[in-house]
Image 1 (cartoon, helix red, strand yellow):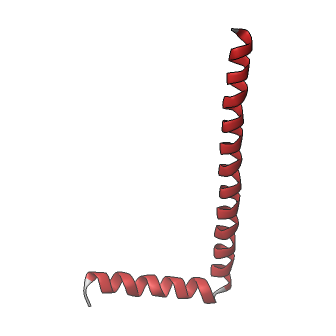
Image 2 (cartoon, one colour; image 1 turned 180 degrees about the vertical axis):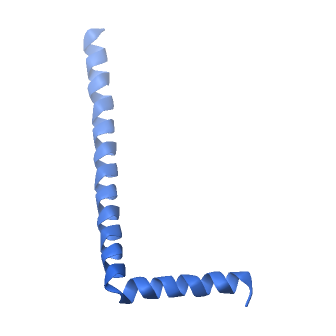
Image 3 (cartoon, one colour; image 1 turned 120 degrees about the vertical axis):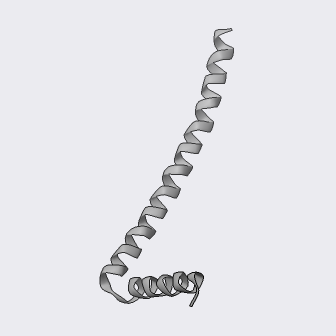
Length: 64
């Protein structure tokens, strides 16, 4: 088996272990929750940044 085959076999073994063992399921659940939280935080930051730009533009035009 070549190097790529070894990597693939190890990847399959790891994914099967995550899927069937309870500790693996916990890790997968935490990874999914982390992904959801990161999406929410990222979109919130983008929304705030867009609104902050508008606020600073309005304040700048009022000052001038």
